[in-house]
Length: 119
Image 1 (cartoon, rainbow, N blue to C red):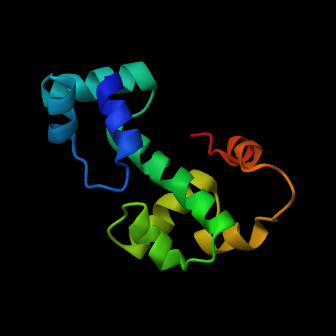
Image 2: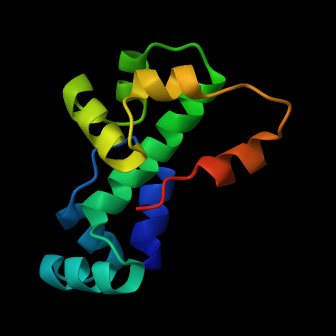
């Protein structure tokens, strides 16, 4: 399970699916999904979405890239899916999040820990 989770952490912007992740973990798809959820408390799909949103939060705070560019950079296939998923996890739209993110003198490591979505 750790190999698959590490693969998701490293390649979150790539198209990863359960069959690929199950092969990485050397287990069947059904066993992978059950065990991943039991181990990490969420489905592989949700974990990957959350990792992508965490990276998007950083990019929205720290860069001036458009929301659409951020969407594709973190691995979402469409801006609509990105906005819906972002709102579901963070509680506000990407544009609203960017407007509310206040750039302060706080180191990024503290900002990332503080704003990490709790799903």
